[in-house]
Length: 113
Length: 113
Image (cartoon, rainbow over all chains, first blue to last red; front, side, top):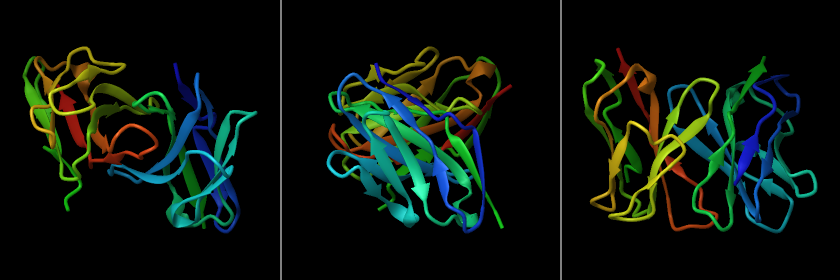
């Protein structure tokens, strides 16, 4: 079985400050990990993914994520937040032996001017 | 390329009515999924398909049926709608198994009165 936890329902940051959205996961094998973003009344859009190799993954719109195997975490980060980053963010995990992904419950990011 | 499209965008049903949601993709992807999104509950997998002519149950399949007669289309049916099926429904696709990210449709907002 695989699962994902996003411990924060809401994250608030000021524009220009760094942001972190947390994600922890559980899989029986090795994980593929994904971050998606959802803007109001839209479908989810892919941001970045971890497959293997470097623990720091860079993605779209200046986002990056750090894979930590010992802590089973894949936190999403950005050095300087923009108001336009305000959205709902989902972490997802897929066991390398499985075809289906499991999504977290989502974290609402609000960036204030 | 249209990517992933969903029809209809909005629908209001009365309890007991039936309807079919259509997901169409022009990316030649093998895997297709139907999710429902409810506030605070993230994305829950209803049914999925790993190829033309195949379907499988997800975590919340009761009350829904699916068909994948053509590779590019994945249909979700509600035979007798219930208020508990009020939700936003998303279709998603990806290429073969592995680390491929999912591409999401824009969603269908369904209200069952």
